[in-house]
Image 1 (cartoon, rainbow, N blue to C red):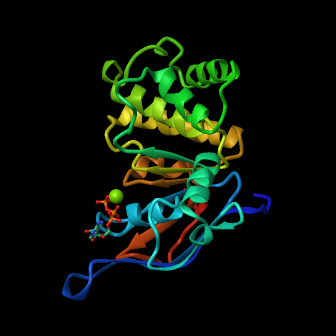
Image 2: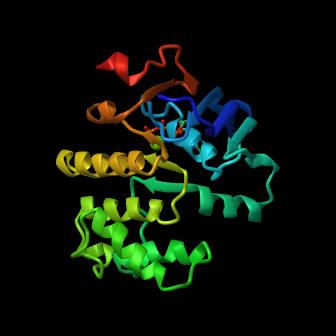
Length: 236
Ligand SMILES: Nc1ncnc2c1ncn2[C@@H]1O[C@H](COP(=O)(O)OP(=O)(O)OP(=O)(O)O)[C@@H](O)[C@H]1O
Ligand SMILES: [Mg+2]
């Protein structure tokens, strides 16, 4: 792959929860970079610090030490307001629990984040419809989340993450609540869209079946990146 600008850079990031005898070093001096257009998986046992690391990378949580750069901006140097602006424009999040708004239709969930980014014109209607159709939900635009299957909900969540065309997508166990078929379908759609639009994607997962979509896999154990940070090519 051609060398490109890094959209995400973490250097020597640590996170300590609690204090004294309850202290837990959930992330321990982790550093890595993700280039534009790259798909990176973070794998590791339960409790190894994956969610903590992803939350820090996305500016949802402040590290105890170390630095995070997104699109050339150091997150810790930003005001709360600047940080939420950066999150809205530069990062799309996909969570295991979907986090869709139950009172809004599929299309409204997607349109909402476009509105939040300052878009109020007619193109919001068109673009949200197009994005959902691209994810196979053209016939489900008006359905509220309760009337959608798990895989459909997760595809709405993927559409919402892509709504503002952010260069970086962060996903925490995006297929965790799905049966294997819909899980695979969601992952393939997400990676196809990401490749097509040259998004950088970081996915936390337990799911060995999606290793094949990755350019690179980072292994986390006890909060540390293990030395065997193999590329997907080595895995086969
Ligand atoms: N808010 C918190 N307060 C204290 N400890 C926490 C908190 N959140 C997580 N931890 C601890 O930090 C460690 C890492 O947790 P984290 O959620 O990042 O792991 P994970 O790799 O995402 O696990 P899983 O695969 O089960 O989701 C665990 O030991 C966990 O118990
Ligand atoms: Mg987790």
